[in-house]
Image (cartoon, rainbow, N blue to C red; front, side, top):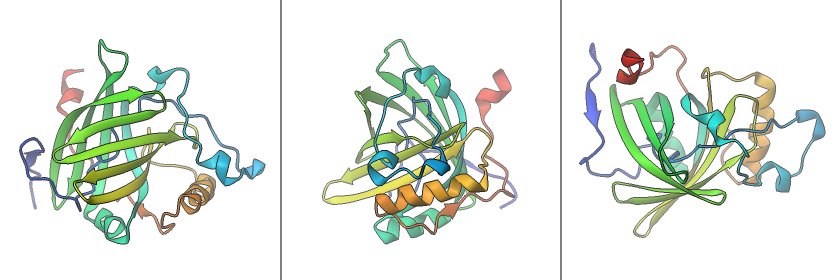
Length: 208
């Protein structure tokens, strides 16, 4: 397609196989504490959810790097996603964060926005017909690692998704991510963003 088409997520029918970054993230108003590969942490440490002390560090834009889904058909569905960005903004309510996203999949850009509610170490939100609940995990510096469980009536699934400020991570940090995925019984043959594909445009960038 020569020109990417903006498609509003609001009002569209929910697709349980569409791995939009909203799945993930109502999220991340959380900063990230680095994990050290040399320390060889066990599963309890690797997958322990946490709430960072200063959530302001994660406001702004993050770029999708890699992820995995469960069951298998959700993992395969990530193949339709070439790249994605998310943007997190505070509100007057300390427990509510605005999440915006731009997903490039099915040869077009899909944009959306949702409010996320943070209670303790859990983040919840609703998208179309699905209820989402997730946690942030410790990961590499300048990264966000999000685990999301969603339910649409009797259909359930989950994702683990890694973001960074640049859309890249150092190769040594992938080994830690694989261990975390194994601990949570996710596939370790991660889907990766297409580095050659241009990110969807963000109108907010034009006004700043």
